[in-house]
Image 1 (cartoon, one colour):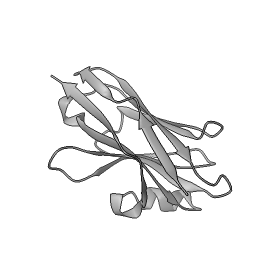
Image 2: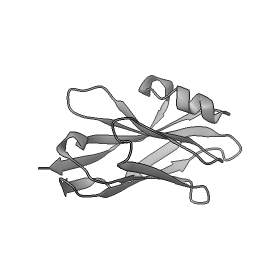
Image 3: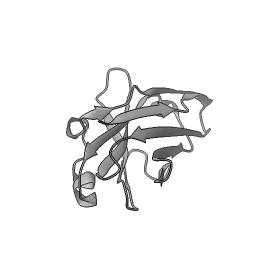
Image 4: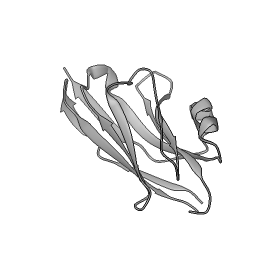
Length: 129
């Protein structure tokens, strides 16, 4: 069973920074794509960053590349999303998601919300101008 809990959301002014954290619980003998998605009101859920557990590397979404980074703590089983130079277009609900996989390349190629069966409850990020 997979359980994901996001934290760290809040309100920030344009140009500011925020760090979100995803605490994951799952069978440590399996590997998963672990990802961040976001959804703005009236828009589709968008992939922000994805990585595979047990290995380094990540794929960052084109819309946030150069401003967002992810870091994985294997011991704590967390995935942090560090967001810099935030602007109002970054406002939305941010979700942590997981899908079982044994390949980093598969994770990077399957970066759509429909590829992920496990989701956290989300955390709200609001950026004001």
